[in-house]
Image (cartoon, rainbow, N blue to C red; front, side, top):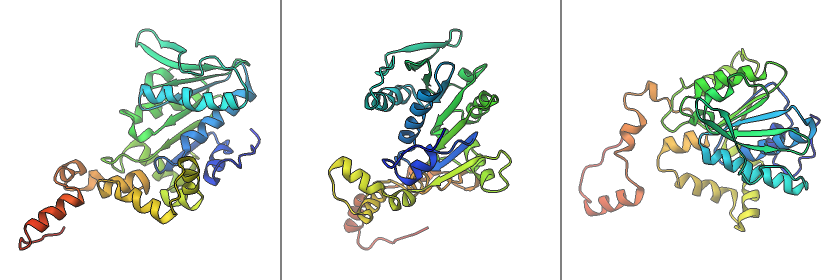
Length: 282
């Protein structure tokens, strides 16, 4: 694939779209447009490669799998005046009868297909084609999903994985280990993309959001509001700062102490009602 005219996208999205590496991994903040950019790349590949090409997509749940076709791929098709079958997410195909595995399929006029399914590792058995795994670290069995997807690309295809980290995760999840290895000796020769919320904001995310929403937030206001909306530090670090939450190395796991936390306004009310009570920090 030649580099596309992607000035519509932000720089980190352009870099991802134009990366043809066999194995691509994105450690990223939530909601910064990686799935959106990837859907454009999928559309491009289908238009160029034609019959015999299949783009597999695995999302964390069935609704997300359908939305990829209905909201993103359909948009690119309409903009390009392409009448693809299944654009509204109504074309459901049985992938495995015995295991009752189904997928949403979008078939292009030239015969290329996008097959979008929920987190079902077994669906990749015996399959070939390009594979996109969305929010890998959030899948129920991410290790098996990666293991089953990787052989699909043996005959010159591509495996793309993108994810933020689990709030209650650890450095030992399959995706976290893969990213850590890619940052060191990189035995799998992965092309690693790292985009925190700060990287995205620096490259124009807030201006894109303002353009779509009609707001007029500054970058500083956006970051402050986004941080304030996170209930815990672990949520902010894992979902936006690309920091692995090392639950395996803590005496107390995130879920244990999260149950004891209170919103700032409730804490302020308790302090006001008990001005002479002792304070502790840890």
